[in-house]
Amino acid sequence: MKVINRGTEDHKIWLFDLAHGNLKDKQILQGFLKYYVLEGYVMANVVDDMRFHTHYGLDQIRQSKESLERVLRVAAEV
Image (cartoon, rainbow, N blue to C red; front, side, top):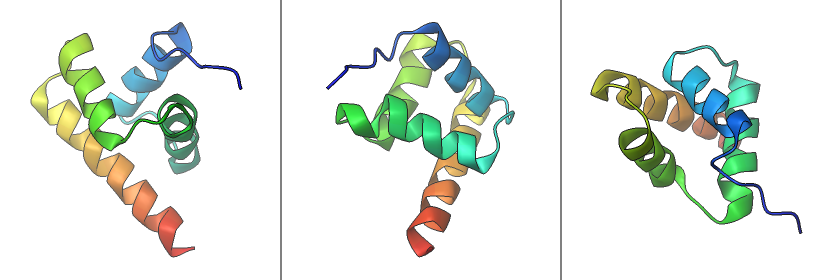
């Protein structure tokens, strides 16, 4: 299985777009699955990555977490 490095430019762009509300629900879910779930990580790791590896403010991090939670809840109901 190919390991996907969470430090790639694609990952950084996904985090940026998540923090700035630029992603559609499908893109949020795909990125979370690609960069986190398939690598054995959880939603808390997204928050940690934003908190410790970016300059995003608490509001952007909170909004990102809420968007991710919403998308996951919707996907779980299907």
